[in-house]
Image (cartoon, one colour):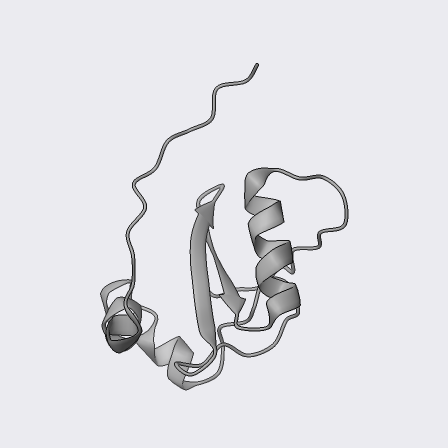
Length: 91
């Protein structure tokens, strides 16, 4: 059995999403439409942002499409089948 790296999980409440992007230094990229969903490649906005995770030092974002959320969570769990993570420059 492999040992997984542990990381603190923090919740981001909907009303604090803009503050989150400011805190991580990505509010300007968000405003310019430069942050993409790691699954579908769609532009992340304050209105469709659903999840974020750090994987291999990179921030990965997910939009609010149900299919993207499912695939995003599967990827983070380490499921090998059926996921695609887009390469983007949002972190």
